[in-house]
Length: 329
Image (cartoon, rainbow, N blue to C red; front, top):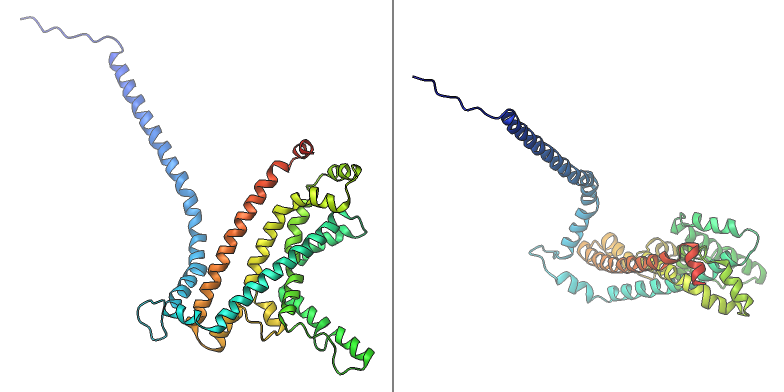
């Protein structure tokens, strides 16, 4: 009986299959490793963001949520209700505070825009000794606390201030003529004095991008300074002026220290009303209602500020390079 013949496999066939299997396994391992690295890369930013988000939620979002919840809670308790809002909105003190807040914020912003534009124009385009030092002082002024400016104005224009003292010494009168610091005009003066550099800083940055050749060309063609400002400088300043004005409007809307330190008893703004209801009257629900209204106004104005700033940045982008400015000129 003959032995069965064994099937002869081609040389290397088995090893090729093994190599293919090994190669497929290696590719699978490499693909899995790349997927794991991709997942780790996606998770890494989230892990880095968790600590600041947790701190933000604990320090800011949680207290804000408590304020909002308290604003919908009656003094007797019970389910959430809009009755506290209706009660506060019906008060004459709230309407007066809202009107004072808006009027003072708008008036201070207008004054800062006008004064800031003029001062920035002089510093940037009118050569005089000390202009560079004055420009640097604007940066330092931004770090000053608001109450410091108010105290300085009180020392000068207060009832017992320098100006009234000089007047009484010169005329022998019992009192001086300067008594406006305790009125809305005094609050406006203090806020304009303090917040004007917030308009000047972006304007000075915008004016530094203006080509002097444009000004010289306009002057050589017979344009007067007012026309040069209107036709050449104003278009460059408008985006920064709008952004600075929006920022000042947000800041003046929430200003508390200046109103408090001027001692203007008849000038009650929303931040002052929050302080009065919470600390003096013990009406925490009413204070939370006023605070929520102030927050809504601030967030709306901040959104406006971000929009204006973004458009200002987009408007300056094509002209940041010298070639673009020269081509346009």
